[in-house]
Length: 332
Image 1 (cartoon, rainbow, N blue to C red):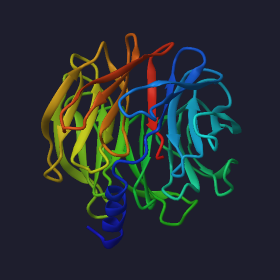
Image 2 (cartoon, rainbow, N blue to C red):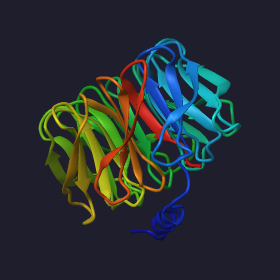
Image 3 (cartoon, rainbow, N blue to C red):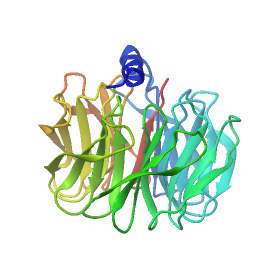
Image 4 (cartoon, rainbow, N blue to C red):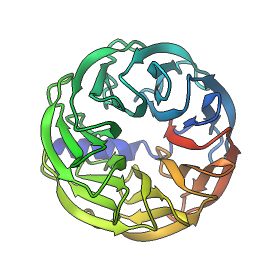
C-alpha cells in the first residue's frame, strides 16, 4: 500500500463514531427524494423531502456534507441539492445530461462529481465553486453508464456500463480530465461499484453468474481478478465498509442481502445474510460502520441494519413512496 493510501485509510479510521446524521434516499415514487434523520444512531425519521422530475437513481454527499448530488430520470437528469443547513435541502443547481443519471460520486476533495448516465458519454462535472456545476469533461463509453465511484485518492474513477467489457477504470490523475487506465471483462451489466477505503480493491456487483467480483487495484491504474463470490442471483448494489473489513451486496433472490468478510484483503467469504422483503438495491455503510442502510423492493422500501457487533440485525425501517434505488449517509 502506498504512503498516500495509508494516510487516507488512517484518516477514515480516525473518524470512527462520528457522522451519518442524515441519509439521502432516491426512490421511484413522488417526491422521488427523501432525507432521513439519523441523528439518533439506529433510528430514522423524516427530515425533509425534495420533488425531483422523476425517479432518484443516484445520491452522493459532498465530503463536507454541504451538498447532495442526485442523478434521476426526467430532464435535466441531474440535480445538486444544498444541505448547508443540516436536515434541510434546497435547489443549488441542475445540469442537463444526455439521459437518466444513474449513479453519482463526489471526488474526495469535493471539486468534481462523476455521473454515470444513460445517453452516454460519461460525464464529469466541475464543482470547484461549491453549489454550482459546469461541465469538466466527458468520456465516451461503449454504452449507457450504470455505476461509478472515485478512488480514495481521487486519481481513478471506476465506471460500469452496458455492453462489453462492462467495466472501465478511468485515469483522473490530472484533475478535471479523463483518460482510459484499464478495462476488465465482467460477465454482464454492472449495477454497483465501490472502492475499498485504501483504494486497493474494487467491489463489483453485476448480473450473470457469479454475480459478485472483487478486482485487485493494488497497482494503481490497473485491475486484475482478486476473487468472486456467488450470491443467490443478480447483484444490484455493493458497498465497502469504512474499515474495509466487510462488503455488503444487495441482490435478487432471497435473502436479498449478503455481507461478505474481507478481513483478509483480496479474499471474500460469507459473514452473514439478512432477509429483506424483496430484491435489495441501494446500499450504504454509516461512516462509523455501525449501521447499514438498505433500499429494496417491497414495502417499507427502506431498512436500517445494526452492524455494531460485526453481524447484522434489524435497527429500524422507514416507509417510502416506492423502491429505493440509491442511498448515501452524510459524512457529518
